[in-house]
Figure 1: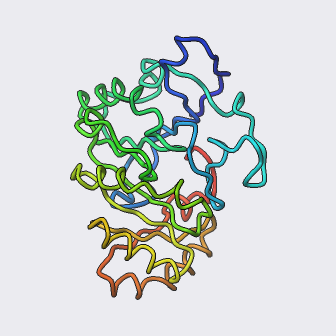
Figure 2: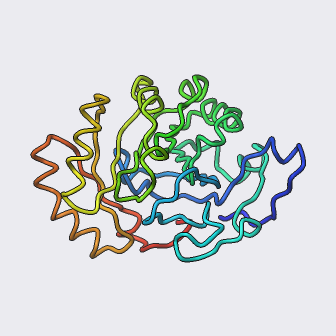
Length: 247
């Protein structure tokens, strides 16, 4: 189910979550929880602009990735009650809060996370690792799925690499590290970062929005990933549904 109302700009709206879409039930498609029954809340806005981003409708208002999206049509300001009303809170499962970059809205997320914790949901926040989490957010989530962006994203290094934020996430004890790769050439960059910050566990995911591309890249990188003692993850949602939104 996707949010459709146009967002406003008054003070009440600024206390709401900026939402791109809410959907489920589906499966978590990536990372350590791949295959788990899950619901998703996708938030709008991002502080990066990856060239291969598969959710540019959450942030790309200028056409950087080839298509201009209108935030008036893509994003909605929703209260916590409105978001909760779209979810089966009485039947706890896995909640994935993603984006965009969810930690841009982490202060506004706290009441929602509290509701999920009280209802016994497991909660994963997906983040690029450029923003340090608030202590209260860390207390309320089950895990951070942290995906630091590599040079293949074509973001500037000083935009995509924030050492203090990475260290805070690793120190939380709740971070799992998932890196998007295009080829084996990306693995040395990951190894350097993992050693520098003592990152673990590490998951490697092939970049792609079509099943043949994902399968080919998985085969190409698998032995090199295995030799480093890392984990590998596919993109289950793409294999099952294709590159579709909100499923």
